[in-house]
Length: 213
Image 1 (cartoon, rainbow, N blue to C red):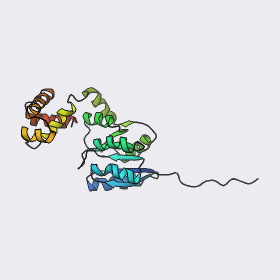
Image 2 (image 1 turned 135 degrees about the vertical axis):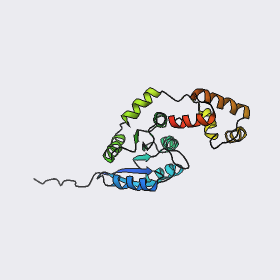
Image 3 (image 1 turned 90 degrees about the vertical axis):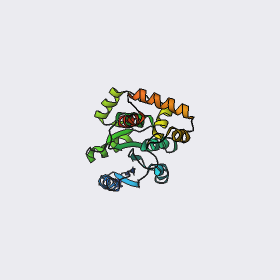
Image 4 (image 1 turned 180 degrees about the horizontal axis):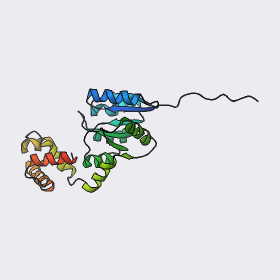
């Protein structure tokens, strides 16, 4: 009887795209993930606006994205990946464990959300789990997001508040978001009321702290 030869080919690696603007952190994550026998970092980028192009070029199984990136946030990139590379699962990895960020990440189609202070074994496990179809969320952050509730700000109010950064005048904001000055004032007044703050500077700080922007 002839014995059928065994197939000793290694299982295919999980292809990972890594988006992190801090070079030292990006290199460390790539090195640590690359030490896992079943994970291969196929692309590294430092800006959000090149994530989708890199994903289309390298076809990763999982995109590991920071939130605060130059060019485009990781959350906006996640939403674009959902449209243009739906086969790529997105895992958000951030320094800032803010409840509002978690909600926005899930709305953008992310399959996972972790903070950077966890062990690398947990990150590698999360990569495998999201590829297997699971949703992986830091449990402490998940509880905080449930208790915090959704953002009270509308999309237009967020746009106006973002445009107010850096001491921009009402006229500057109106030009940036293509609204009348009176409409901008109305939106800023609504934002101040919803955030329970005294002025737009405090409102901007509060919205960023909650992860609403």
